Image (cartoon, rainbow, N blue to C red; front, side, top):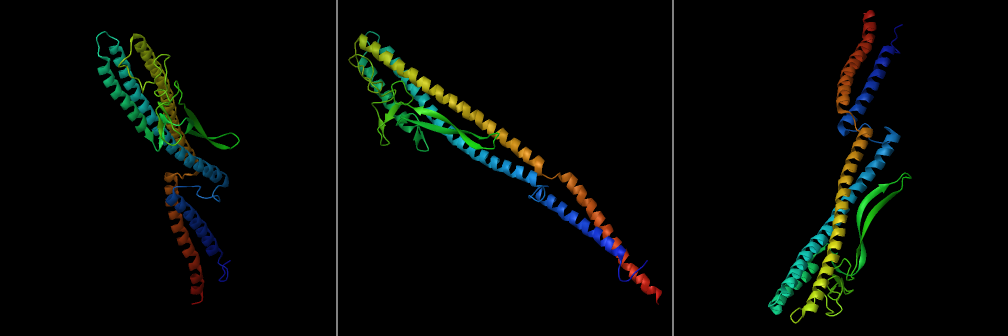
Length: 304
């Protein structure tokens, strides 16, 4: 039946066109954004998971920055400790030289004094971002070492602790005075030692030492060198751990990006093909609607 009041064919063609237009709008949105799940209404479960993973990835980025800051502090401390070890080795060599018969100990002491001043210069200079891990007040310092989301969905930041110890066998070359300055009577190099000589490596003066005192001075320096080597080894191990953690955080961040992409990213090859097909369907639907609307004109021709 043909009716001039109800054009069923046109209504059907219009419905098809609306459906195609809706599909085109959705596909064009995916093509322009690159996401098939851009908001919760697209897929609530995937959107929720992806949003949480994105927030974790942002946290990992902050952890990576914190690791970089921590690595700089540790590397600065290690560089200072390593340089100080080289200087103490020189002092030890000078002491060995001074034990020989006929050597002018006063002349050797002049060289040792210069090396002692160099030790203080190293200790004062080895600071990063206002923190000095080889000279200053005794304390426990921490560096960020990781970010964790456990099975219960609780998040936490992991840290590594390094103890700044101003004892003779500690980790500080010199201790602090409590007011931000350096106390040259504490620490590995500042603490007095030796039953006879009763001085520190920093205060050591061999100008008038006899054989027994020279032997004691050599022992004092050797013990200080052992403590410094131990501290440098600990700093080195922390530096290695931070480096490994940085690599892991980078890999983890890439994995999260990949996982998020699998959940929400659009397949651009598929979407572009679908868009092309929808464009063709739209043209056909428009043509179909035009044909359906022209049926009324055919009816009019019957009354001419």
